[in-house]
Image (cartoon, rainbow, N blue to C red; front, side, top):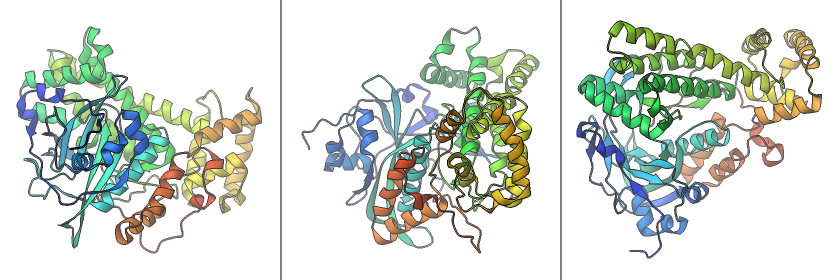
Length: 487
């Protein structure tokens, strides 16, 4: 036992909920765990001791071989609509070791992904592969530094223990940090398998933990629906602005806390096209890039259904209340999205007249198969970035109108450029960069490319901090790029 103070300050208030919301879990040891990567900056921000995490005791916690003192390990039960179909789910390979309280009082779930079987494993082995866990680490950290609410990755621990995913590969455990893991699917589970009191208890717990300012409202449950609706509209708008595709927007993958969670077959678009999808399991394109706002509203509608009795005792009135609240989703989404697009173009104080300008541009980008990220960098830094689109009649026609809009602003050209620099990332985790880093780490046990990419992703808006080689447009592929859940 090491004498170093771990820094862990854990509670588990989730176990104050009725027992059918979770199962207490005993750890399932893995042999000879080794840290592949540790997020030292995040550890320090959480008030954790880095040297402890690197010690045998710390690694055993990150691997799920033991649980910190004064903690209760649980797997959470939930349900969800997967590709539109309801099913019973739950943490089939994840372990919540507790809620860590930072020195400033903020509370975060500490969860181990790939830690072994739970009562919700549905025949799975409860383990995870090294590649997908490193992928989640890369993407979630990229999202954080892009300024998008997200669960984060603290560490990936690997083992020589083997799992079978078409072939024998090394198992790994990801430690992730989130405001909580309460999902739309958690409410669906309560409404389906519990009673009205269970749903109310869950709603009260959610309000107290995430939205305590609502407790004094006349009807806090209406305000909870409104708050969750607004935060999701804002979150999805942020996804669209950087070209992020979640990949599996099932209701169990939507956090009530307004964070991006459950990174599976996620990716970023290169060529702009609303129909883009990469997930190997999304055959119909349900969760394609352009569908994400619509699916977000669909998921929120499922959430509203679970709390209808809390909105009003009269069902008809409750439905009307829910429809009115959900009806604001589109306005909130469009306001956040189009004002964000205006900032990408250096336009201050978004006006409704900008919408046609933006939509025309996006239509032309789709038509000409334009790289989304590098197009905006070209405008921002007045460089070509290998784009032929700038030479086309469609662009030149659009540019004339765009230039007129810029001239109507009070702000100078320099101020406009500064706004664009803050709004257009130079570096996103492009698919080919991620794959190169993962292949080197998994196949060659070399994480140098992964660390180099992560270092660049820490400063995506600072041109002096990003190597231009990361801005290179990928070569055209003869076979469409696909992503996998990694289960």
